Length: 123
Image 1: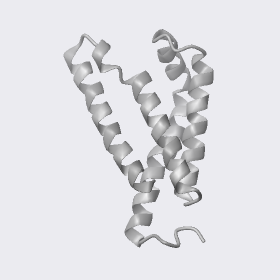
Image 2: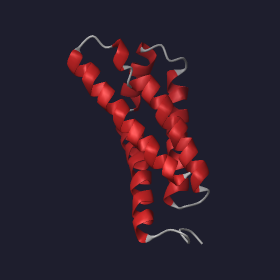
Image 3: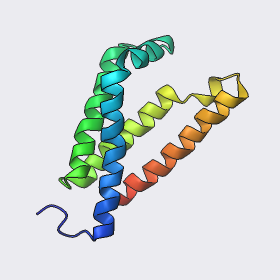
Image 4: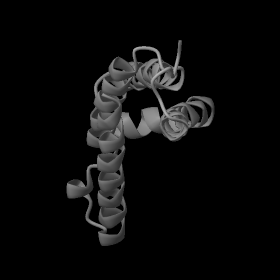
């Protein structure tokens, strides 16, 4: 049975983590696919569209696994790999000349470190 060993607070937290990944997946796949492919290509990511869709699949599979509490640790690891790779692709703060953009992307990296911590708790 799903969530058999979880407290109500743990269930809510787990669903909140899954919502982050599944919600951004829906938004990005539905409305920002072209924008992301263009940014990735400009950054030199090979086969940008394929890499982006591989990321979407990782978000979907890992997010659903965490949401329904099915092989949750595996789903969390998938989401951790996704988070690290997405941060390395999209938040290259060290390459930015504009101090405000650099600070913004560094803040995204720190936020993603907190997300990784939450995912570690699921492992």
